[in-house]
Length: 111
Image 1 (cartoon, rainbow, N blue to C red):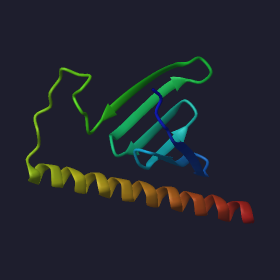
Image 2 (tube, one colour):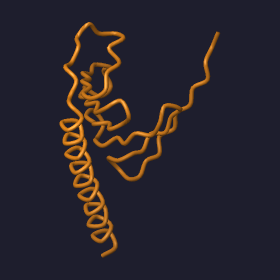
Image 3 (spheres, rainbow, N blue to C red):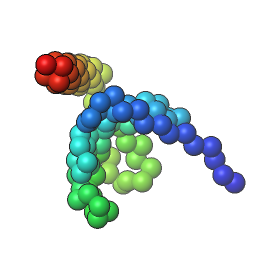
């Protein structure tokens, strides 16, 4: 029996896109051959050789453990809250830098 799937990528500007799916939104930053995706399952980094199908992907963050025998030691609530705050701060800084670069490039093109 089949299952219903949904996926849509919205390009904000070159190098930044928002991915929408049934499992939730995610943000992808990067260029062809190298990108980072931030989503509900954690951070996924992918590097590859465009056009060859050869790539390497690593994921950090939430793992179900279903496909892996490796078990991570759980963080205390305080450690998790601290890690979450650091990640949110880093995402905020990165997003501000991307927005600033966008407006800088837009201003340069308008001249």
